[in-house]
Length: 307
Image 1: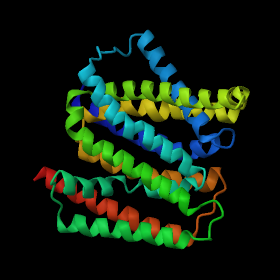
Image 2: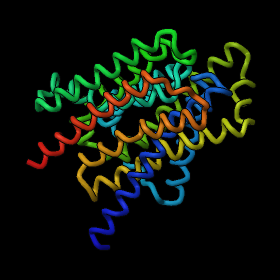
Image 3: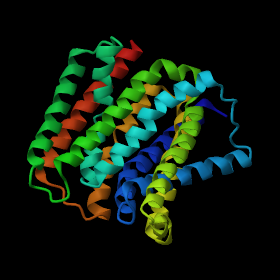
Image 4: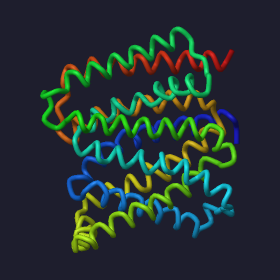
């Protein structure tokens, strides 16, 4: 297959991935209408585990032997992602809007850059530092203005979302060396299965203790809830992993990060159109600073890599 055609397919895949990730925050809000955070996480990763099982059954996936040496590193990484990451994210979104979450999660590349500079001694340019400052100012402005303006957002929700962001950043920094021993797909598969086991045990045990086991299954009767867990478990987890792996083999990884930064725009638009969320002026101005800062850091990161 010609290289240009393969690259074209990779870019089309990245556009699709951007839309999937951007809309995932919308689907989380929809799912939380019908179930609590822990039940929702259990069902979400059940859908992901089932999809992995189907792919393995038909030969699309092959599981590699898991030794204790590999398992202990996967357990360490899994503690931060997906366990803490999705846990904080889901609880945080119970007290925030999808638009707010999209803007906050746009800071992942920025915070990763800062943390990598501190712990991995990775250097940043002056322009990147300015971009980081702009992003911090934008987020601080949104948090300051959030007090009492939006009835769907609380400071607790924002704090939990930031804890989710720091969880995934910690995962990135730890995984920079650890993940050299694993493929991205291998990590995704085993972490999805681990999250499926732990969140289901947590949810079921909680219901058994309170004699409310029927409430664990009742949300599955709601079509809206069922579509949300299928979307998040299959598209947002497994499919995006396949797309990322394919894209990484065809185009530079630095270009993929730029596509990831477009997801918050999809989230904000989706929150307004699909969830009837109100987009306030302070969110627009603060979000503009965040996105501008991200673009500055990513563009100049690419130039540095090319040099």
